[in-house]
Length: 277
Image (cartoon, rainbow, N blue to C red; front, side, top):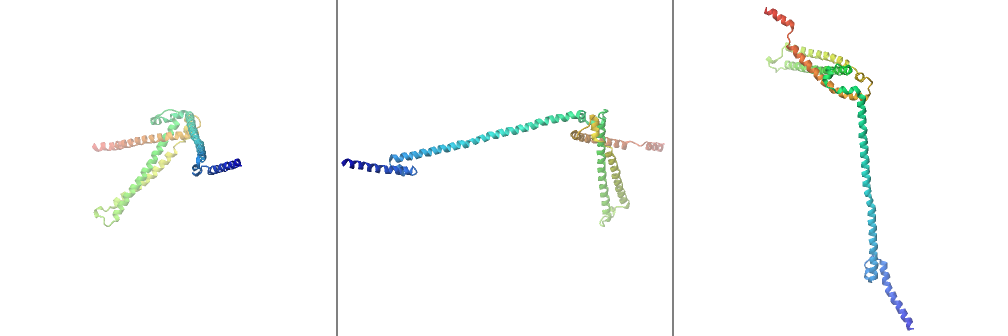
């Protein structure tokens, strides 16, 4: 009987001890009460902390995985290299094209010579292009003459308008009122200017008509047909040459006009001699 009572007391005591422990497990370290009930609760609290640590470890693992984004930089670098390689390919491809153009030019490479050759060359191979450049320069100067003649008309008209305005203004002093002779002279100057425009335009039209075909001139010099690429290149070169030749021809014409003005007409010389005798 005593033994049974002792056994029951031990079971009851064990039950009392086990109850707080189970309560600590239930809280699982989620609150501080588990830690307040002895070491067992604290143990579970630590266990919870351990799990939390593991969870943190998994977080780091996630960061490690997200760290793989650094491979994106590597991909960008590779992409950049491919882009640069593509550019290099284009640049390399342009070089043979330029070489092919110069290969097609053949004799036309000599178009880059100076203007003295264009004005004085006796080469038969160069004659057609030389004629084209000279004719184009003459046409350019003829058009410049038309523009100068038009400006002369503007000036003559302005002079006539100014005289007419003075003549019509009652406040003009008597000694400044234009005479009829002055008005007639101004009108005659305007008429002459208009006629000069007509003459200059006729010469310009004729000069333009005299310009030969560039394609024919290039084909004759190259001794073979030329394509659009060659014609475009030659046009760019020759435009500059035409400007230079036109300027040179204009200088020569101006010098010749000055010489004519200072040279005495032979008929005038003979008249002066007879008068002196």
